[in-house]
Image (cartoon, rainbow, N blue to C red; front, top):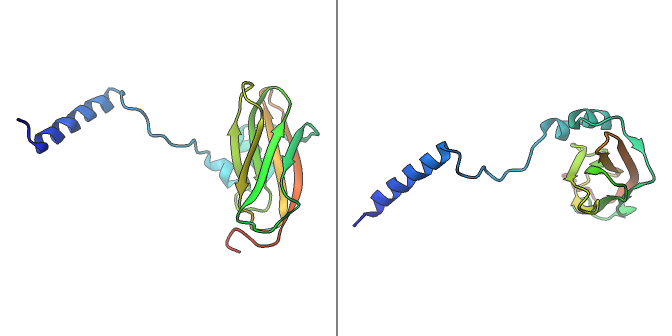
Length: 152
């Protein structure tokens, strides 16, 4: 009969062999683009994400309240009905990190996302659609914050 110590040693050996052979799944971690999250303006953000110069478009919609009573939980959304969208972004101009959310989408799903973000102060909120053909389209809306969410 195997002891518990022998069983654990055997399991560790098997796990090590599986990892060396590449048979264990990779860690479930989100992709991290440090340059994008450190960008302070739209031009730097597009450079970090490999996008072109953005153009304002009526085909992209940004949703959010005109006045947010609590900056810690501001509901915002981005959508477009255009075909060929590969990524939707939500940007908060005056936040320490301009990029608040990034969603990769395909033609198999409707390009319509919503989330909640923190806003430290009143700011413009941008919905950005990055297209498969390299175009970058955006819409913006001003959201006024009465109680700051980023330490305020």
